[in-house]
Amino acid sequence: MTDSLQRSDLVLFGVLGDLSRRKLIPALYQLDRSGLLHQDSKIIGVARDSLSDSQFEARVKETLKTFVADEELVDDVLMRFCKRFHYVEMDFSKTEAYQALKAAAVEDVDRVFYLATPPSLYATICAGLSSHALISESTRVILEKPIGHNLASSQTINQAVAKYFQESQIYRIDHYLGKETVLNLLALRFANALFASNWDNSAIDHIQITAAEKVGVEGRWGYYDDAGQLRDMVQNHLLQVLSLIAMEPPSRLDAESIREEKLKVLKALRPIDAANSKDVSVRGQYQGGFSGETKVPGYLQEEGARQNSDTETFVALKVNIDNWRWSGVPFYLRTGKRMPEKRSEVVITFKKQPHNIFNDTTADLQPNKLVIRLQPDEGVEVQMLNKIPGLGKQMHLKATTLDLSFDETFEKKRIADAYERLMLEAMQGNQYLFVHRDEVEYAWRWVDGILAAWEQNEQPPKPYHAGTWGPVSAVSLLAHDGRQWDE
Ligand SMILES: NC(=O)C1=CN([C@@H]2O[C@H](COP(=O)(O)OP(=O)(O)OC[C@H]3O[C@@H](n4cnc5c(N)ncnc54)[C@H](OP(=O)(O)O)[C@@H]3O)[C@@H](O)[C@H]2O)C=CC1
Ligand SMILES: O=C1O[C@H](COP(=O)(O)O)[C@@H](O)[C@H](O)[C@H]1O
Image (cartoon, helix red, strand yellow):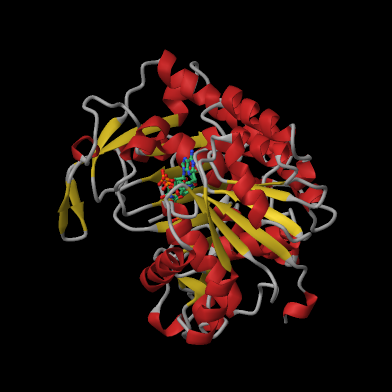
């Protein structure tokens, strides 16, 4: 399988960090196990701890034992995988330290630099690489999110990186774009005439996008308190999902065509400002409560918490897209920590039939729904009405579900983690699952407007108990329009 693969080597900055341990190293291992790493590809791990190659190898093995299922840890793959690694100790902020990397990266191959570091280091790292002639035309750089804290800081980062890399060399990660089910949105929309012809305001009543997490902020209070749920989840993941659902059909399945269409959606988002933010946005912050059976602390009682923080851990928004296709179709977005369950899904509610000929008192003509379960239990379901079998003049209807679970339909085929797909695509030089600079900046422009409105209107987060679906006002947001969240 590796014959058709392009060789590229990976340099992983921040190889000892949380993201590398939990996601990147396990994902690279899985790619190797699936025969998707070129046989000669090398991985250089870079961080500032002083470790010999054998100490580093022990860390890699320990990471894999923790984050890869026992039955997937195969001895010969593990041996091959560890042989690919080399560790370089360096302080990223010191220009002279890049000499050590230069000495390790002697082969003349395509190279991908993955910056799994705080974004404040991106410019410094790019400058260090450049000063040691480690960047060529074929070099690519992967940037982790968040790209900045607002529009201004994201522009600063993007400009700094652009001094050293062309846009075609920059791969901005949004890991939702690597999820199997998020990609399936493209198949669902553009491979099925059934949906393609019903995908606008003539057929759709409204759309809900939920990304609920059961966990709290865990050990990430420092980072999270500075960000909040709007910056952490809406600015990137939810807006990317929304863009894929709302965009016009791209003419080709390539980076340029898809990104152009997503960008048009971002440009068409109706601003949320001080005049409307109280009507169309809800902020929440969790208090103590229960996660399943377990009692859990509130946000302000988490380890490392600063008292009186008014950072939101929940956001609900009513979003309008001001264009021809979506005029009059609201998109309701919600995302939060410490929800009752982990669930990300898109629910498309179609319009009701204009007239009921059935005269069935047991069921009014409930609208059809298309539910796209992004995670867990990945799948697609269509809710529709059917006749209950039976003789008699009177027809009785029943709400029924056509449920296509990926697990059953595709015979329990393993679903690859988003980072596996994204690293594979970056190493192969395919940019279509990565975010263009303009998308990042338009998303920030819109999000900055919401943040400014919250500040101007003094909209503090409303409390909700851990283990619930957010503050009551999130329910009112839809109730006000005669709708309710899909549970
Ligand atoms: N963790 C996650 O789940 C997610 C993380 N991200 C993003 O990924 C990036 C990395 O996050 P995460 O792994 O959590 O962060 P960590 O702080 O856990 O890891 C950062 C790594 O960079 C190293 N580092 C930092 N400064 C220097 C320096 N000057 N010289 C050498 N090494 C340095 C750290 O070394 P040391 O330990 O010595 O400080 C560590 O190995 C961030 O941009 C984050 O926003 C995005 C989505 C999810
Ligand atoms: O980027 C992030 O995403 C995770 C949620 O990702 P998921 O794939 O588990 O849905 C979130 O927990 C984290 O706060 C955020 O930074």
